[in-house]
Length: 368
Image (cartoon, rainbow, N blue to C red):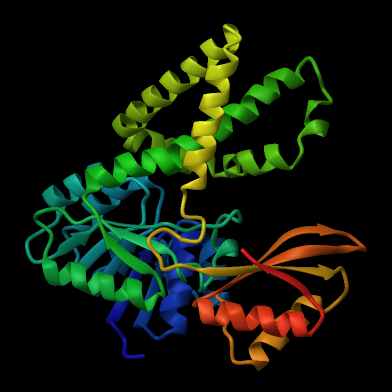
């Protein structure tokens, strides 16, 4: 692939920065990738895993020759980094970020960036439970939504250049107003984390008097609270930088929760049933077969015995027929007995062929 940039500097070689570096290096999207991080161990691992070509501890010495600078630090540091690098980046340099809040950063970037250099706000809607460069994956952005949040002052050519990079990463670029972005992610991303954290901490209070409560925490509790494992510093910064949108959404959430509480207090069985039915209907309307704004994913679920090599055999049967598996997930497993696996394909025709092939092999399979 033809390089998009001569030099890219990534400030913050963690999960997102490291994954970006791996994709840039492996796909030859930049002739030179420089990583900047205050943690020398992170830089060492980034070099070992070919996420960067060179490492540096000071962004001031790493950005001067860069065509693209990616700020991949917690959002609370982004504006300060912009102030530091703005006087020393070269003409034509594009700066982007990966933070999950945008309005404040885009507003400050419009004020800070020097003439002839450009800022394009970015937010890849992807991640991993493993933090830091150890969790980095060159395919992290494959089939992910990557939001770009230009302002009215953002240079169109700079936007298109970043969009070209996003597409080369395998992601889907979506342009969105920064304020609209912040309100929407406050509802569907930030609120769920706050609720998960509050739920875990509530159970923590119960545990003070009932120390066995976590023994009863089954799959529903674990699934609901999984995102509470996020990095505390990152989420503190997100809450503060998106304070107004989060507070507005929390007010709406409090109204709904108070209404539910009143129904329980008043033994309003009809109201409760209607409330749960409405939630069930709305939940059912979430496009489960869509990943953000991406095309329909055609899925099947297979039931297989718990034996060594069973997943490889599944993939082999399908691969031998020239069918590409877009996504795979182990749903449930009972050790020593069996489990269910979800497979996703890019077209209905591939889905139908996969079902036919697996059934011919005696494998239990159903469309999802």
